[in-house]
Image 1 (cartoon, rainbow, N blue to C red):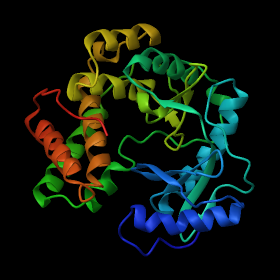
Image 2 (image 1 turned 90 degrees about the vertical axis):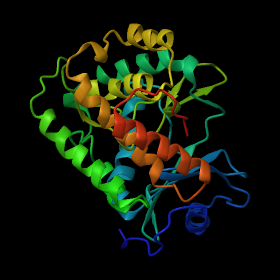
Image 3 (image 1 turned 135 degrees about the vertical axis):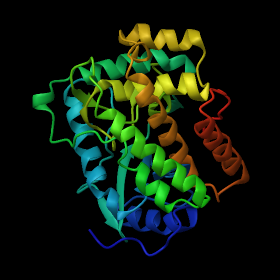
Length: 303
C-alpha cells in the first residue's frame, strides 16, 4: 500500500480523481458516475457500466477491503445471498493510498423497515455458518473505528472528551459480561440498509468490511438500539425481527451495556461529515444530546 492520502478531507472532491484513475486501470467508464453514499466509503454508481465502486476512507482500510473481497466469495459459496464482485482482476486497487473495490450493481432498492424480518433471517444464516471453515477473520472489536472518529472528527472538545470517557467506562463493563449465544461469524454492521432488494424480492446482503468472529449479540444489538434509542422501528417491526431470528437481545441483562456502544457508533459515523451539510450537524447535535442525557427521545433521523 502507498502512504496515507495527502488530503485531510474525505468527500466528493477528494474521491472523484481516485474514481477516475481506478476506472481507467480497470478499463471502465467513469464519466457521469453518481455518488450514492458518503460515510466510511465513497460509493459511486457508474453510468456506463453496471458497476458500483467503493473507495475506502484511508489507507488504514486496506485490510478491510481485502476482507470484503475474500468474504464475498466465501459467503456465495456457502449459499448466502451476497453482493458479488465485478469482473475486475486483482482487487482491491490501491489508488493514491485509497483502497478501491468494484462490485456488481444490484438493480433494486435499499433495505427499508418492511425488510426487518429478512434482515433477521440473513443474520441467522450468517451466524449459523461453520466458524472453523471461515476464511481468516479478526475478532470483532466494537470500538475499531469509533476511537479514530472521535479523535479526528470536527466536533467540540467537550463532546470529544465525553465520548472517550463513556467508551472507557463501557470497556470495563464489557469485561464482566457473560454472553448467552455461541460465538459466530458476524456481519459487523447489521442494519437494514445493508440489504439490497432486487426485483425478485429476495434481499442481498452488502457491506462486508466489518465481518469478524465474535458474539452474535453485537449484530442483534444494532436493530435493538435502533428501536429503543433512535426510534427507527415500531414495536411491531422489532417483534418481527425477534421472531424471525429467534432471540431477543433486549431480554438479556447485558444488553444495557451493549446498547450505548451502538448509539455511539451511529453518532460517530455521522459526525465525520458534520461539515458537509447543516442537516448533518443538526442530527449530530440531536444524537449527542441523547447520549449525554441517557433519555430515549427516539427522534433520530436516519442517514
